[in-house]
Length: 464
Ligand code: UD1
Ligand code: MG
Image: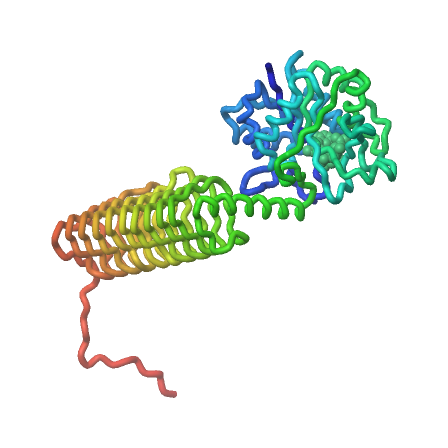
């Protein structure tokens, strides 16, 4: 049976006090709306329809970019006259039959299994509401049931509710699944005669009742799935709960987090056995840590793969961006190291403080321990790259490669002007500016000869 998903994302989000559309504010590094679209993609719906309004162009372009493969459709709601009015805008693109699942773009942590349970409860014929019982139901639409408690009769918005209805703690989460043909009929009959002068989607419940359509309710596994974001404080609160849940999942797999409250994952983190992660680390994009990896405090690691037993010391920044960055097994990186896109470090490589590596390959056992730059370089095995040495890889117009053979020793404070090659076993004298290839096995020095002048006198201050 056909399934359509309608995601409401037109609201202004006044309480965010931001020029950015609310649904584009990020949770775990990803726009809230992208969470909802991404999660529900697994339901294999025939289409996902996003209702946009406030900041529509920006919302549409960023979601189109994020979900190039998905069959996303956008419908505009201008002006925004309420949730019922929002779904009315989707009616022309909904098929005649099947089921429509309605979700909110500002409720990012809904799980696919809960959304599926709602669709299943609808079963193509009932009106299924996702409800939850809250300690404090203020602001929410209340679920009004019959005397037996079995039948849902209506949803009454907080502002329209009587004192007795306000005592009800079962609330509507904003998500429902309905038979599409019926939904279209109900939407056509909505009016805005209520406290807010809006077209309430929730009024379809009473209509379903009147039409003899059974109204059923399903519940999420966890409250966090249905928490919506209206303010920066709520966004931060949800972020912490989400991070805590991710941290718990990793710890259940055996990952040792020094403090799960000081851990941030904005993407996916794959960990082997016996991984230790110290406090205040941020993982972004796709990160893989092999067995026995240790991550020191205050590291930021994005789109990178770290080999077994490697130690990343504190304050290291690894950013693979779109190219990725890889570190082999048994390597020592940092403290204060910076690995940029295209850094490919072999096993047992050592990268020390204030060393930057970009688009470079370092073979097994190569070391750059202090204050150095390696850009667009191919570095052989066991190379020792001295403190303060750099590759001059950019001539102002183009980038050029530096190729360093095995067992090369580059002294301190050298400038290697690319394109250039240093042969196997070459030694480069400290302080050299190397502009021509250096032969294998020889000492190459390119600096002014040292002279000492006997009988030289320091200038004296002129006497008056
Ligand atoms: C809605 C429900 C309420 C429920 C609550 C749960 C209605 C009438 N009420 O209230 O029963 O308890 O959600 O959070 O549905 N939106 C549009 N266009 C509009 C208005 C809203 O796209 O014209 C979008 C918003 O961007 C948001 C969602 O719909 O993503 C919900 O809108 P919101 O104004 O937050 O509804 P609530 O008043 O919270
Ligand atoms: Mg709301």
